[in-house]
Length: 83
Image (cartoon, rainbow, N blue to C red; front, side):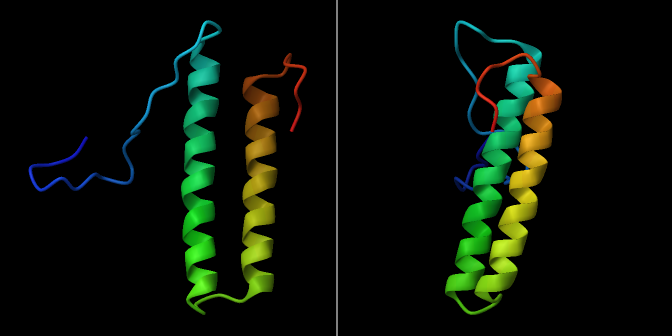
């Protein structure tokens, strides 16, 4: 939620999961997916500004992807669409 200056705390959830197949596990995965996207954006920005190398950015993104896959498989083990 934004404060009076319009600044949002990056640790807060800023969108909600809606769908006919809603479940607490799907909501948790949705939050993990948003966090993944936010972190990817930060890594890309750091790499673009020369703060991390392309190799380091790649390794960080690869680790985030592994974490997201584990999260999906743990939270939604019966879904057909595996990452």
